[in-house]
Length: 302
Image 1 (tube, helix red, strand yellow):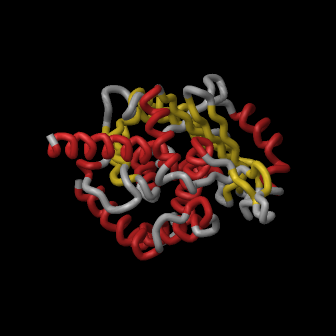
Image 2 (cartoon, rainbow, N blue to C red; image 1 turned 90 degrees about the vertical axis):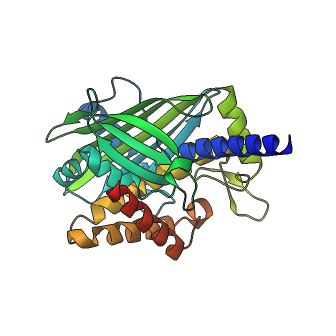
């Protein structure tokens, strides 16, 4: 009986950590139908201009999040210092997204394959430390290019099911040129969750995630320090930022010789996350580099 209980607890813990990793890996991006237009994105850019230039991030970025009883969403808006043609070329193919996703601390593996209709991204997410593939949670995202013109890029990823009653994982990235060889990017992510998912995250947030916060300032503490949003919105905000930084790190390494690009991407991502230690610090530089080099080699070999 003792062995049975121990094994059952281990299984539940693994499933809980898998779902938490999936949530924190930021693999669920979404937006409302009908928003895939360049005109709508230009209007969004105009509405975000003030926030892009006046924010606490020390870069042209704005971030927001929302939570309901059944889902959670995050949005990031950013000005990228790369021509739109570079961004479109670099983010248009599914295999390029694997080069981005593997930078995230929770992504253990990513592979792009041909699906029945659209390409498929097979992704494994797990802990923030080294982990065998078979202990990480597998997901399959349908990959679709909704628009890829000289004036607009829109990418969608969709996965209907996740662990612990989570569902409707969807990804959206949109980008437009805005002049001066810069690109405006909108990244949104969302997923739905049921009772099991809510209970799992409540357990996480009450224990090992109790000191985690996001970026939105909701008040001032007694010592004068800013108080930041926590809970599910904190989870969403941390990983919205992580994935934006992964995209920026990937783009920033494109001009590097191919054999040095992985090193440059890892360097860019880690240095960027260190600008926000309260929210994003998890590993030291050596541990992150060693883990990611091993995971990248495994990804290439498999």
